[in-house]
Amino acid sequence: MISLTDKVALVTGSTRGIGRTIAETLAQAGAEVVISSRSADDCKRVADEFTAKGYEVLGIAADVSDPDAAQNLIKEIIAQRGELHIVVNNAGITRDNLIMRMKPADWDAVMAVNLKSVFNVSQAVIRPMLKARSGRIINITSVVGQMGNPGQTNYAASKAGIIGFTKSLAREIASRNITVNAVAPGYIATEMTKNLSDDARQRLMDQIPLGRIGEPMDVANLVAFLASDLAGYITGQVYNVDGGLVMQG
Image (cartoon, rainbow, N blue to C red; front, side):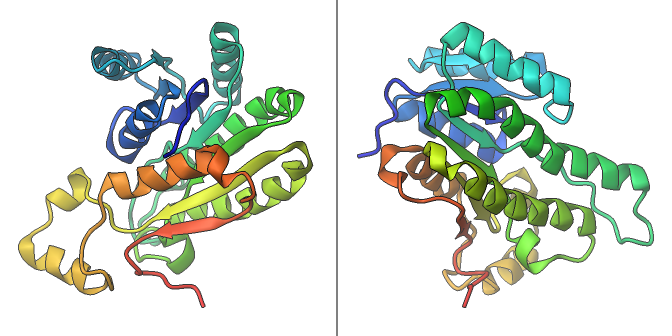
C-alpha cells in the first residue's frame, strides 16, 4: 500500500480536473497537500473541502508562471511546514488554434504556464531538496507532446519541452537522491470530454486500444506511486497513461 505519511506535497493547478484528483489522492495516502492555483478563492474553497474530509491541507495562491511568485510559494511552504518532499508540476492551459491564426500572445501564454512554470517551481524547490538529499518532482506532460495534434502547436511544444526538461533535470540531481519523472495523460474524462457528442466520443475511443477514455484517478494513482518510497529507483522516465494510444517501440 502506498503511504505518504509525514510527507508534504505541492500540486500546482490543483483546484480542478486532474490536478485536484492528484491532490486528493496524495492526501488520502497521508501526505499534507498544498493546493495551489492563481485564484485565492479557488484555493480556499478546495482547501476547505479537503479539510472537511479530514485531510491535512494548505491552500496558497500563486501564479507559478512568474519566477518571483514561484519562489515565494516555495518559501512560504517551507516557512509554514519546514519541508517540502514532493512537487507535482501540473499547472497548464490551452489556447488552441491553427498556426496561421495563432496569436503570439497565445503561444507565449501556453509556454509560460505549461513549461516555464515547471522550470520556475523546480528551480525554487531544488535548493531545499538538495539540502535534504531527497525529493520527488513529477511533471505532468501529455501524449500530445509525443504525437502532436492539429491546432495545438503551442500546447504540444510546451508538453514536449517538459519531457526534455524532466530527463535533463533527472540526470542533474540524481546523485542527491532526488527523482524526476513525467506522466503523460492521454484522453482523460474532464469537463471538455464530457461535452463531446456521442459520435465524437466514439471516434475518440476507437483510437484507444483499451476502448475507453481514462479517468483522472488513472493519472493520480501513478503520480502517487512515483511520489512514494516504492519508486525510489525510478528517475528520468516518461509514463503514458493513455489506454495504449501511444505505444513506444
